[in-house]
Image (cartoon, rainbow, N blue to C red; front, side, top):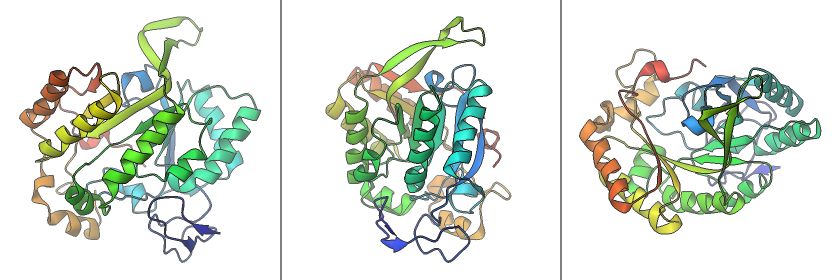
Length: 316
């Protein structure tokens, strides 16, 4: 079967296993691969809570941003193969560890296998929310395969600027694709719902309101990218109104000078864009936050302090 799961529409036969001759953009075969499955405490507070989000990082990516902090898995192919049955067992293990939800990170190129795993887990009584954590460079047709199975969508909205999208993410069509994908996510889960976090004794933990259903749209502010950021915020406000949930992130981590963080090919691509060799300034980030306030946005997550550190990158 030829693969057209994502907007790249490679339309080629994916091999059964990665490592065979792979010519599709994501670089993955049909068999799912994951690089890490563990509790993750650095998502938005209503996703991680105090107990953590059960994050499953899938190998490969259909976007491959040149500044990706997870390049070890998005491009370098680090991971192991799992069947839907094994993935289902991982879900239950993360629940046993106390996870508030199952957080599927960069899942789009493995959606058929993920659908099978979610359905199998629900047949076995699994009751945690499923989170789809993606770049929003998604096919609407593929997202419809997840309708009724995903409780929370956590998409990025990276660019409205087509030049930035082309230069940084090899996807000039990103703005159009992401707008359509987010619209489909909002259609599937239009009404956010929260509940108090439960402790191991099932007593409510009122300091954390955990999202059970909904959409949170993330935007990473980039160096010299304020104009693009303001346009992203304007679009979300104009399209979905001031009550839309937005997470404005300042955590951009420059990896150009970090030993071992990039392959030579990645370093060469990044060398063409010196603006990406530094962190976002406090002034740049505050301009974006001030714009959110001026628009009267009601539900905005922000990051405080210095969160742009290599230590926040999970060990894959």
